[in-house]
Each structure stands twice: as structure tokens, then as C-alpha cells.
Image (cartoon, rainbow, N blue to C red; front, side, top):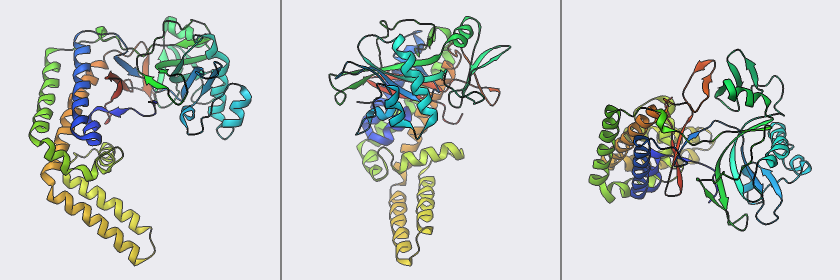
Length: 372
């Protein structure tokens, strides 16, 4: 209902089994058709490396304009109508507080009279001088670094960025009569937003007419999708049921995949066993009593014995995961041909955009080359 996290396409089967695979396959196919057809809409968007994620607009219950961080979705929401609210809620985080002060001053200049939205903040007039976030004017344009990626605008865009007091990418709209009932919509209606020189607003919609999706690239995508589906069909319920003890959001399988991204190892059932063994060993080493250590060792053995007994299913699931990832990476490679009018750098080296998002069946799915 609230946008707090976006799932990688290939991780959906690790989280939700067969239904997760069906959603991942459909989302990737949707992106494939969108790119092939040269689409330009909110069905496929660029993922911007902004910070923080901000929620703003006119509160559905009070009608008053507000700004907030993701803490708008806390059990006790932190909603800021005034600068005093911001100071009260966020004095522990001066950087965030300064950005929210700027957002409160300037976003009201462009938002419609109703509606709640979410987006990424790209820069503000309260960014500390000398910090990495501060906009820098150079020979080739104006640069800003909201998080990890440094963005550089050129030409007319550079002039707009230089003159603006705030930069934002709006990617989500919320619908609902109460804050609790609000649900995220990845297809925001931005037609009623006003233009104002104090706010630089860029659309996340990715224009795939600007990329070339060759027959070779399309064949590569289909090859991996077909291989993934073959494993899904052959493994069936038996495979997904076998791996249930380690699946689910935040489960051992998802943790292990994140680990392999860092180590660059090829995921396997054997690798998962080692990952779990190491995890329990670290937990055991922190314990002081032999009884506690013995209990951890027994829990670890229970996991690894189970994986060994079902190794075929774990290996097949992880092969399927790899094929989905390879299909996704091919789409990302093609989409990277168009940078959305901005140059991207990390540590002064040219890089690609952070990634992309395909919005399918009301849910966003992340298309990111994790190795990069």
C-alpha cells in the first residue's frame, strides 16, 4: 500500500514461490514489449539515485500542505506542516531536516491543490556548502550528487538546475480518503503540476525510442526467459515447497543472493549451505556458554542437512534465478543507451543510470544490474 521498498525482478520467486515467478516473468515480458515498441510512459521509468525519498502534498484528512520523509508511514506518522514540525520531528538528523525545510518552502509552488505524492529529492538550496550534495558549476555543466551517483546537466537543463532552489523526481501518487487507507499508484497524474523556476522537476518516464533493441539482444532475452520458464515448469510445486524453509522476504535465500552480489560467486545449494554455516558460526562466537554454542551448531546442521537432502531443488531454483537475472540484465544494457538527458559519474568515472523500474499489475519491480 505504501512505497517503502522495490523488489528485484529475479528475487520475486525467492520471496513468493510460483506466484513470484509468474509476476517476475510477466513484469520482464512487459518491459521487453515496452522497449521493443518504443514506449514512453510510467510503465517503465528510470530509477534516480536521489536522497531522501519525500512524501508531500495536501493531507487527505486536513487538506493542509505537508512534507515528510518515509516516516510519514510510521505507526506514529511524522507529518510536517510547519518548519517547527520539522525541527520537532527531525532535529536528530540535521541534513534531513535542512532538506525538508527546503521542500516545505518550495514544493508548494508546483503541487496541485489536492493529492499526495512521493519522489526523490535531487538537490536543495539548503545543501551544506562544500558538501558532496552541493551543486557544482563546471566547464561542462552543473553537477549534483544527492547520494552515490553524480548527475551532470548540460545546456538548457544546466541553466534550469543552476537557477532552481530544489530538484525533485516524482514517481508515485497516493489515493485514499485517510492517511491509513492511502495506496501507492506508480502511474502518477502529473498534468496538474505547475512549472516554477524555483523547482526543477524531471519526469522519470524513460523514452525507449532513444534506444536500439537489436534482434540479437531480443534473442538473448528470450533465451534466458525460456530457460527460466523450463525450470519453473519442470520443478513445479515440488521445487517451491522444498525450498520454503529458506524462502520469503528477508529469508536465507534472499540474504544469500545479496551476499553473492558482493562476493561475485555463482549461487548454488552448496554456497547457500556455507553461507548459513558461516552465519551461525558468527552468532555462536558471540555466545559465552558451551550450551548456547552447541544449540547454534545444532540449528546450523539442521539447515545444512535439509539443503543437502534437497540440493537438486535449491540448485534448480538458483539456476532459474540466474536466468531471470540474465534476461533482466540484457534489458538494462539496452535501456542504458539513453541516460535521460543527464550524465552519470561515480568517483569521476562515467557510469550508467542506477537502474529502471517496470510497473506491472500495480506493483513496481526493480531492473538493476546488481553486479555493477
